[in-house]
Length: 307
Image (cartoon, rainbow, N blue to C red; front, side, top):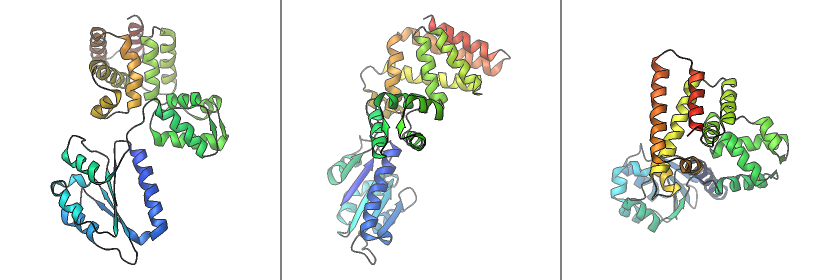
């Protein structure tokens, strides 16, 4: 049996690989496991690992990590398939794969293909609620969304934060989330811009002051504002693409793309161009001249609120 684990969600890839590996090792032992790095191994090594028979075991599991990095493997994939031993189970791990290539189509046709893509804004809170349930804890959907807003969409980080919250109390609430977690700057900047473009100048400035109180430097805030505007521009100009398509092409989380749609809808393309131009000019001045950075950034946020 040959399984392909593909996609850009490294958390899901690692989880799926660990589960399948542990199930196999439980049945056949650790000596039945072989790992090969496709970025370093030769084609002969990739071929030999799959066609050789197990030692002191009925079967062996071969994990090929990024074999597509080996050009010869991709070109001879059909021949490689023919030589895989009946006593070998193979997991092909492809974190970065182009779905337009013939190699991907072969994987889809000849292997069990499991896609591990980033979760969207509907799936991520539900996943978090399910994870809490698996750990015999209680987390509501609204509080799951709140936790994501505070710490971002990285699933590994979310899992770690959730485990910390559960240790404190099996009933995870908004108050415990506020007590035990901190706003990540990247997550906060979206809320800052959302408030500014929504005309809520007071809230935008309060969020800015909170970031400064946490020792986040103005240049870092400016960098994150620029990054968020970049995502908004991608969303605004990709009118014929789904959030997932944008995320894949730009290599960012679909959750980030979908959140940015709210800002993109409020702005015309002309307004967005002017905003980006103004922000870029201020960024240059902050880096090349002496000025009051806090005052300049606050004025920038006020200008956003007046659009």
